[in-house]
Length: 87
Image (tube, rainbow, N blue to C red; front, side, top):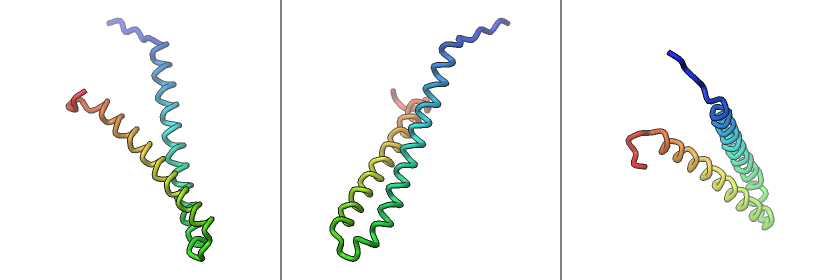
């Protein structure tokens, strides 16, 4: 039995997997950071600071957006892997 490996295809798949994994982890980390920042700013916003309220809203929107990106990437990956889902 002779097994040959297409090394260029292997390297391409490895690079794509590492690249996308790094992007998803970075996106999730940014979302956690924005969510934490929004919670810290919330105390200032309660004191009536309108700029702090604006900052809190922007941080929350950014956090939810990055989490949505991560969730959509996860759902797409499951869609590609699971064989009984229609393609």
